[in-house]
Length: 426
Image (cartoon, rainbow, N blue to C red; front, side):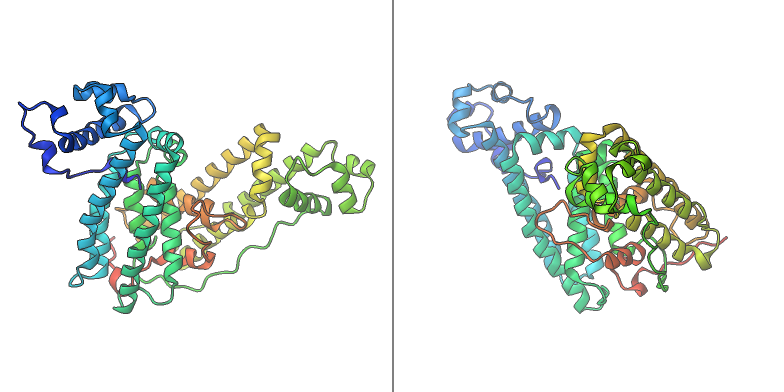
C-alpha cells in the first residue's frame, strides 16, 4: 500500500507560514514543514540516502534544531506515515459510510481514492529501501492496513446483504486474496520483473476482483484437476524427502533406504544426487508443457474449461515441489534452480497470453483489459495463493480455498447480473 508516499493535504500552517518569521521560532509549524520536506526528499532521493543533514539544509535550519523536533530520521518517517494514514482515513471513510450508493460504486470510488498512492512510487527500489531500512515503521503501516481490511470486510458484507455481491463465496476468502495480491502488487521483486507500474497492477487487481476475467455469465462446470505426476518409484521417494527435509538434508543413503535399494543400485540409476533433483525439475517442466501445448482456445464452447485446465495444471504440478525443496535448491544448485524458475515464468506467461488473446478474439474477455496486467495478476495469484503447499506472504491472512480463488478469477465477486456487459459486434 505504501501510504507514506501519498499525502494530499497538510495542516494549513505548513503552506501559510509568515515568510518573515524565522522557522525556528514557530515549533508547531516547523514540525509540519519538516514532514513535507522530508517526504519530498524520501521520494526523490530514497530513505536510506537521505540524511538528516540533507533535510536540515533543505529547511535552512541547524541539525540541532531538527533533532529538537524529531530525535531521529526514523521518527520523521513515522510521522510522515501517520499523517498519510490519517489523510487516507479521512478520504475513504466518507466512501465507506455513503450507504446511498451501491457497493460496487463505493468499491470503484476507493480505487480512485487509493490508486494515486501507487502512482507516486517512483521505483521498486524505493519500496525495498523502506522495508529494509525502517522495518518498525513498515510493520506499523502493515498493522494499520490490517485494520483497514476490517472496514473493507464490512463493505463487502453489506454488498452480500444487499444482493450486490454473490452470497456463494466466503467474505474472509475475498479479504485474504485481496491482501495477498495487494502485497504482491507492491512487492519490489514483482515490479522489477516487468514494465507494469504498481498503479496499473492495483487497478487491474480491483477490476479482476470485481468482475473476474470473463464478460457476462460464464458459470460452467469445472473439470477435475489433473492427476499427479507419473514418476518412477525412485524419483517419487526422492521428491517426498526433498519436499519434507530439503535437498541438502537428504542424502543418497536416505533415498536408497526409503526406496528399499542399495546405494550402489541408486547410483546405477543416477550418478549423483543432483541428477535426481535435476530430473525431477525437467520431468515437471516437460509434463506441464505436454499438457498445456495441446490446449486449444479457439471456440467459446471449450474456452472456459481449457483456461481452467491451464491454470490448475500449473497449480497442481508445480505444487508437487514444496517451497522447502525449491528454496534449498536455490542455494545448493543455483544454476538449475534459476533455469527452472525462468522456464516456469516464461511457460506460464506464454500459455496464458495465447489464452487471453484468443479470449479477446472470441469476445469473452474485454478488449480494454490490458493483457500484460492480466498475465501479471494471474501469475501472482498462481504463485502466491493457488500453488499447493504455498503459504501467503501476509501474516495477517489465512490461506484461501483454491476453489474460491478460481471462481474469483473467472467471475469476480459481483452478482452476474451487475457485471454482464453487451458483447462486442463482429
